[in-house]
Length: 314
Image (cartoon, rainbow, N blue to C red; front, side, top):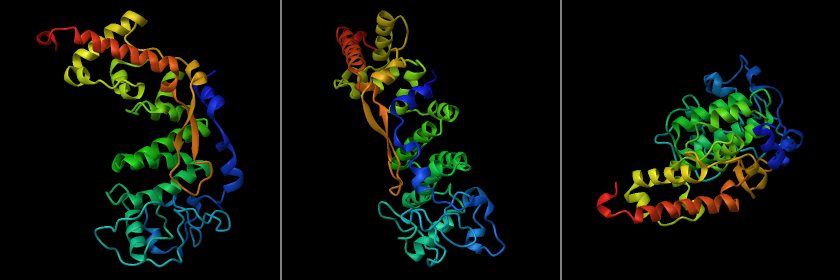
C-alpha cells in the first residue's frame, strides 16, 4: 500500500465529490474563450493569468451565474471600473471582486497584468480564491492553478496567504490522488507541518536532531535554556542519544502512525464560498508514544548538558 493510499484511506472525507456534483459552475474552459470583441482591459491580461480567471459574463464567460453567486473571485464585466490609484487602497478581510470600489477594481485588474509585483494581500487573495475553486472543480486546469499558486508563493510572503496556500496544495494532491505532485511539493516544505509529518511517516523518514529541536514546544518541552545557549552541543547530544536508543541518527517514524494518531483539521481553504473547507489529517505529534518519547529525549539531552561544567560546554 502506497503513501497516498494511507492518506486517502484514513482521512480523506467528503471533499471527494461535493464540489464536482453540487458546486460545479463552469460553462467551458477559460482557455477557449478568446473573442475579437473582448474588452481591451481583459484582453491584455497575460494568457497564463487570464485562463485562470472566473468570468460571469462577457466574451470570457466561463462560470454560470445561476450556480454559485458568492464566489469572491468572480469577475462581472458590467461592474464599473474606475481610475488606477497608487498606492493600492488596502482591502478588508474576506474581499471579493463584487465588493471592490470602481478604483479598487482598476487596481486589481492592473495587478493581474503583473501578479509577481507586491501589492496589498487582499488583491492577491481575490485571485487566489478563484485558483482554489479551480483546484477542486476544473479537471483540465487544476495543474495550471497549482503552478500559479506556487508562483504567487515566491513573491508574496504574507503569513496567512502562505498558510492557506500550503493547505490548499496539500489537500489538492490528496483529493486528486497525485502523489507525484504531493512529493515534489512537500519535500520543499521547510516547516514540520501536519502534512509534512504525515508524509514523513508514510515514507518512514525519521526526525533529525534539528527536527526534534524545532518540535520541542509542540511536545511540551519548555526549558530551552541549553537549546538557545548551546545549540551545537544540544544537537550533538541528541544525536548521541538517538544512536543509543534507536541505532541511527534519526527518531523513527512509520506508516502505522497514520492509522494510530488522532485526527485534526489540518487543511483549510481560504475561499469562503467553498463547502467543506477543512480536511482532517493525522496529528502525529499527538500520538501518545511519539509525544512522550520526543519529550523524554529532549529532557535527557538537557540533563546531560547540565552535568557538563560550564567551561567545557560548547
